[in-house]
Length: 444
Image (cartoon, rainbow, N blue to C red; front, top):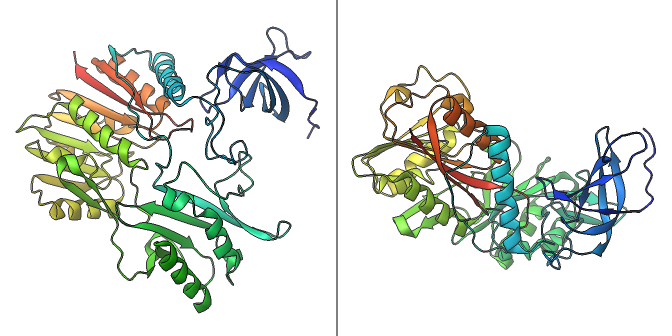
């Protein structure tokens, strides 16, 4: 591998990448034209920075900011002392209001470039608390002998390393401000080298830590975890193997649940279940989706990728009947339990892999009035190409990846004759480059 020239260089930042880095063009004697693209972490459009190369590629290079010579008016001081090293955030140096507008531009550019579509109406961005919002995530754990300590945190920007965190300002405070204590706890355990990760998840009343351990945990270590849980008000779960091996250490039967007050819903979940990470934004997202879907009493609604019933159960408060479909059979079991817990009898759930042939599923052939989708990053192209869309009055698509939304929007508009009536962004992950969005389609 050729040695990277790490001589600092000054360059003007002209654009922004989808992952929150500045874009510059650096003259390259081997390349004609404007020069080779350089993606520079810690730089904003309109700035002049001194940077240093970190990686070279055939068509672009990567670099990090050493000094800001001319600052953007959008630049603000980063709140977290670990920003720039920890890979958990990419945009703390950018004004919060400008972050969501940058994400909106990413969405609109993706819709135009990939889907060849433009929404008739751009929805106002949905935002909520920008700090202390993250209630689910995973910390990596690594004992580093050279530092004489156990590191607990997200991965560094260089993903080979674990960031040495003392605190995290995007994670809910009852967890984010306890990282140093968690690191000290694990460092004092017999099995400190056998714990690769600690996941966290929080409901309204209970915050849980899930310790993955590769070897049986000693009684001494279990006692230390229990004492830590009692001191800091955590529920502790152990995971010695796969997902099914997760079990509570303390207390014996902790309750994990969150409420959706506007719909009088309580959703109960298990430690490794998927829930939306941002409580306040999740409530606003549900309200926006239901408003766009415009469900009427008597409507039959199909909710695909339904999970625990995050949208399904609120929908059932208005609709005549709601059918939720999800690939994870465990989540479907919990969704049914949640429907029963909330005394909803007009909901039906089915487990099905929505990225496969669905012809043999009876629910596919049932008629629906409205469709809601909340797919993973890969999008919903497979199921959309199989669904009989005739008879549907409205489709609302909640997306966690603008490129897959743009692709699927292009299919609906350009191949199936639908109209993209509205689209907009939602700041589910402030200070990161993650773009969450919502779109509404109606037949022509």
